[in-house]
Image (cartoon, rainbow, N blue to C red; front, top):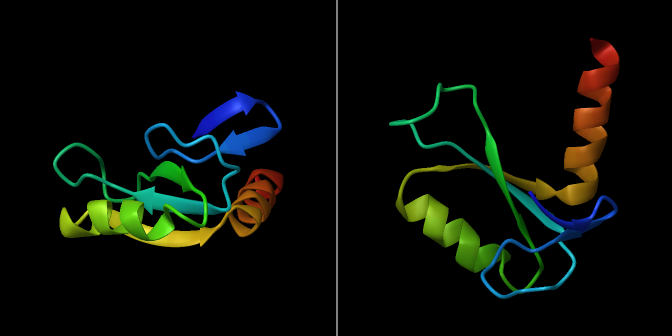
Length: 80
């Protein structure tokens, strides 16, 4: 994920400095185990473009809001 500070996640699109709203979870099956998820962050403007880029390659696994992603990750960590 791209962060300027620990509290400000930014869009992963090249040159974009907008606040991230979406998490695009992806996996390259040639490099990663099936359960591994890499992430890109996206603002509203770049969500579709980044999703298409990953989708055409068969990498895109999920698109969720950043708030949902962080909530789910926090719950997973608390369950350990």
